[in-house]
Structures are given as C-alpha cells and as structure tokens.
Picture 1 (spheres, rainbow, N blue to C red):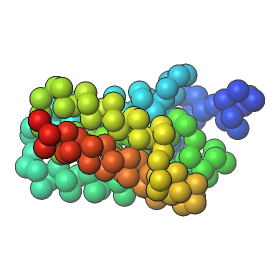
Picture 2: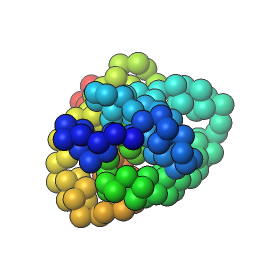
Picture 3: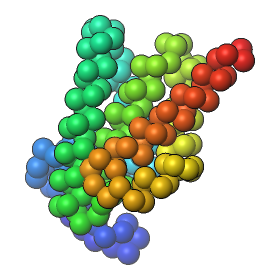
Length: 167
C-alpha cells in the first residue's frame, strides 16, 4: 500500500486487497483498485453478477442474497475502513455492487432500462442529494458506507418508476 497527497491517505494495492477477505470484498473483488472512477467500475461489476445469478434463482432467494450481501458489506467495509484508517475509502466499492444489484432486480430486463438505471444510480451516488449526503457524513461505520448507496439506489428507482409511468 502506498500513500500520496493525490490519492488521499492510502492507495491500496494487490497485496492489501489479498491480505484479508474483507478487503477483497470491500474493494469489489478488485474493481476498487481502478485508478480512475473506481465507483463506476464497481457498479459495472454488478452487471455480470446479476446476469448470471438472477435467472438461476427465485426472486425471494435473490432478495435474500441481497440482504446477506448487505450484511457482509457492512462487515467488510467496516473492517477495511479500520485497516485503512479511512471511513469510506474511494476504492471500497462493494456498496455500489450491492445497491446496483437491487436496482437491476427492480427494473424491467430490457437493456435500455438497465443503462438508465446505471446512469441514474451513478448520478445520485456522485451528487449525493439530501439525505444521502447527511448519512454519508454522519454514519461513520460499515453500515453508513452501505446505507448511502442504498438510498442512491432508491432515488434512481423512484425516477425510473416515474419515467415508466409517463411512458
């Protein structure tokens, strides 16, 4: 792991990623090591996971899996944040993966809807409108890391639901 003024307190590397299972999970199986836009790269990880798993399991199982992944994410992000000394390091992208899996689950399965969901989710995750920004700044643990992306997912879904009703 290297440090620099540009990357913040720490720039984790492959050694850090593989040092503990929580790091591997929190960094989205390596996606969080991307040098630019790790949150976007992490969100993209959700696509193949969804395309592989969703058709192979009943909806109730998929939702149970998402709940379990959320809990695992709380643990992994908490542990990784402690190890890095950074509450919500930009490379910790498992929160994007899990939240965007929920978005994909709730959308019609046409590619246009999935692309729109991706764009809106990223928009809300980056802009962090109220109350996302509030929770991002005040809940300083693994739950907070996961929660703000879950709210961004709900914002994206609300906009998409309104769009769907308008069409």
